[in-house]
Every structure is written in C-alpha cells, then in structure tokens.
Image (cartoon, rainbow, N blue to C red):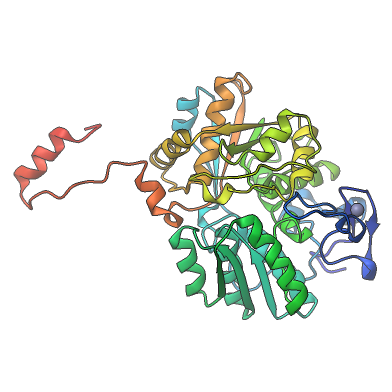
Length: 419
Ligand SMILES: [Zn+2]
C-alpha cells in the first residue's frame, strides 16, 4: 500500500450491497441501477468505505492530514494544483449576520475557478489507473470546465454535455481548454442522461456527479482542510450550496471519515441552500422523504450551477442532513443577487450566484432562529464571479462614463454611494 493509497470497499447507499476489488462496479450499484427511472435521483450511488484503523496506524494526524484518506494510488497529482484553498475569517460577514465568527472557504482559486476541480482530480486519477484516455460528463458548466481544464493538463481527451443556455464564460472556458463540446438544446437533466448513453456507446470514462463515486470522495477534501485550518476543531455549521447534493455528500463524508479516525470529536451541522426555483432537495427535506423521488417538474434560477430538477445525489445528501442534525433552506432570486455584492464587497472574494447562495442561506437560517448568535459558520464559496459576469452585473450599479477632468471626478465623488 502506497503512502496515499487506502484499502476500501464500495457500499451502495440504496441497498447496502458491498463491493471490493475486481468485482467493484465502475459507477453505480448494478442491482439498483436496473430499477433506475429516467429523470429521477440516482439509485445505487456508491460510497467509499475505508479500513480506518489500518490506515491510521502509525500516522500522526497532523502529518496524515496532508496524506489524505483516498483510494488513488500515488495520490491525485496530474499537473495542476487542486485544493488546499484558503479559509478566511470574515468579521464583516459575521457582523452582518449578527454572529461571532464566520469563515469563507475560497474555492474560487481552484485551477478552473470552481470547487468541481476537487472531484475531477480524483476521477482523473482513477480513470488513468484504468487506462482510460477519454472522459465525459454532463454539467451546468463548472464541472465541464473543470474536466476540460484538468484533462488538458493531463493530456486526456474530453467530451462534454452542457445546456446551450449555460453562462457564456463557462462555455468559452471549456472550449479554450480544447474539449469537444455538445451544447445541448435542453436541460442539465437531459444532458445527464445523454452523457451516460454516450459513455456506454463510445467507451469513455464518465465523471457525472454522483454517478462516479469518486466525485463524492474527491469533494470531501474541503472538510479535511477546514478541520486542519481550524486546528482539528469543527465549526458549528458548514453552509453548502446544493444542486445535485454531491458537495453536501462529499463534505459530510470528509467530516465523517475524520470522526471515524477519532481526529474530530463531533460533526458540524450541515446547512444546504437551494434557490427557491430549484428546490427539489428542500421540498424532499421538508416532507421527510428519503430522496429517491426528489424531483420538480421545472427548475430555474440565476444560480445556474444549482439548476437541477432531479438532484442526482439526493439520497446521500438528505442522509447527510439527517445525520448532522442539519437542514435545508431556500433563498429567492433577489437574495441571491444581493448576496453576490455582499460577499464580494465584504470579503474581496468575487463569487458566482451559486456561491453567493451560501451567504443568502445563512441569513435565512439566522432569521429563522436556526443559527444562533454565538454559533460559528463556514461558507463554501464554490465558484468564481468571473464565470458569470451578466449575473454579477445585476447586483451592482455599473458606472456611466464621465469626462477626463478632475472636476468631473469631484462631481462623481459627491454622488457616489458610500462616499
Ligand atoms: Zn444497491
């Protein structure tokens, strides 16, 4: 066993079947997948379960935190630096929320500008171990840009299924990386089904969120980093923007692994935030459902990364909320747009609408009395504002041109807000 390779099995979160070694499926549990209905959350998502005792033996937690519990032999290095992003305390956000401590986990600095790089890095490592030379995924934009960028670094081919209506910056970004783009006249959910069909037909390796268990496992890394950055204490709350629910599931998995290893004493409470117009998870949460039927007919929001009608990882996401005594809130469009400017101006981290939703959700939870003044919270800032300038433009007053004179500057200063 290499330094970063851990012994593991894959357990189906739907039926509990376990798979190990050569018999392990590449994606979802075959028995459950046979019952899969189109346009529904995935059945048979696989969770990676480790022999924690064997892995922990002889490791000091400080040293082992950089040698993270992962299934990939030789780690996930492939040319670009992924993860180890900053955790900034924000006194200004804390003051605005009426709280003692709020931190922001800045994943806008990932190589392709979003949290998705964490999942992609591990998927590519596992695909390479299987000798795959071409990958694919369906995406609202960020996962596709991530796969395109990291495949470019690794010298792998990449075929992407993205709704044609995705923000232009995301489409241009992945095209610049040299990926083949199928811009589909349809929804993300249709792209998802199509990419799986193409995977079967063309023999590509699939990185779809939750369909590949490594997307969840890769996304746990932020939880490890937060624990290290806070000295192996955990915040009271971690606020996670949720579309498919895979980041939520990944963050839960990261903290759960740390707890199994005995390196943290308790789990943080997870707070999922969805846009009001794409709230399939939130509805299932309110109804006490298990997530297998968490869908809504139509999903729409300015937070394009969260526009999902059938959250693929709903079962695991709702379990994560239940097991951490967490909850799911929704934020409306006005709150999300306002949050873009509030987060960016209070922290210096320019965020896309989905990331801003984390802040909007924290304010909703505070107003509802679900988060207390003395509590601590970490917001996951999952994507850069540069990904969607038209959305950010709705949050600010764009300046009109003035003459190139000091008098005009003085006149502008008299009318500028906040001067
Ligand atoms: Zn199963």
